[in-house]
Image (tube, rainbow, N blue to C red; front, side):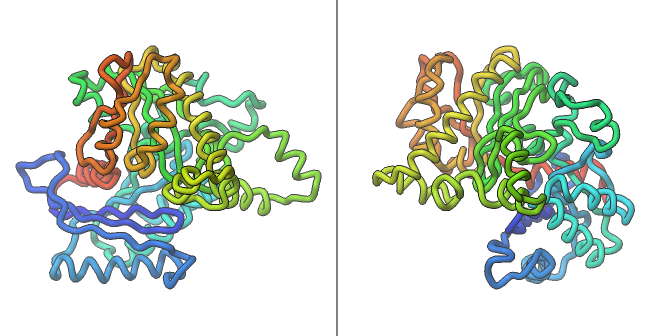
Length: 383
């Protein structure tokens, strides 16, 4: 059985195809094709519909005329309605589209790809897998905002959390590496990429997470602000900002881009090493906020058995990992510098903390596409 996974980002479209044989069950299958279309909207590719056409052409060549048996789609925001993966039909697509304003960088391109894929393969079962699903176990004290109840009941304003597919995947791998059953695993998991979040896991369940009603809340990100005093937004409204200007400010022109002038971590790290004060401030601000969250989530998860780093920055930026761990000394965490250098680009998980560290720190590559493929197969079953 061939399962195609489509992962629509704000400016990219990743895909992979996995073959699952009857005796392989849900063990990830065998990846037989993968690719990515980047710089959508900023280069030669105008939008995600054009990117989908490119992917479809690449798939035809890679699969040699074979057709896929199922398609799994990453969808960032599932709102209150979607608590598990869902089989796609027109009504489901419309319901996802209604959530576009809650994840303006990701849900709209995701919806474009959902529509394009159902037109291209109308008889192939398709599944939406939601980033919010894993966080549906948040206790009410964690998901509630201290706002009038009417706003929750009328508009669904609450904390949802994101990156759940990645968090659950790397959390289960961390538990396996430690020899701890997933249902007994307590840990702090940080997904660090252009979008970044951190989650407290207690007994295999999400109990707190840094992103909230939208993917804006929490850590310093590539172009997103993370935590901001709401009074700043009221102040800017009174100064003439409207909703569109605030949206662009917070989602597209903040974070590393605002602090360092751009959002490429490698460039920022090199600039900081060469004495650029803005780049240094950007890295220090991001590490400070992440360390603060990790300390709090160590408490929230009832004592972390591990701190897990994943995502593009978590997996590949040894300098940022070193900067972060230097701030976690009060938790008894210390760095193994050699292991930290070796961890960049590893396919399997690696411990980067020193033997005397009271809490192990693991770098574990995420594989959201594999998790989505497995969730898709579990829902649609064998052909």
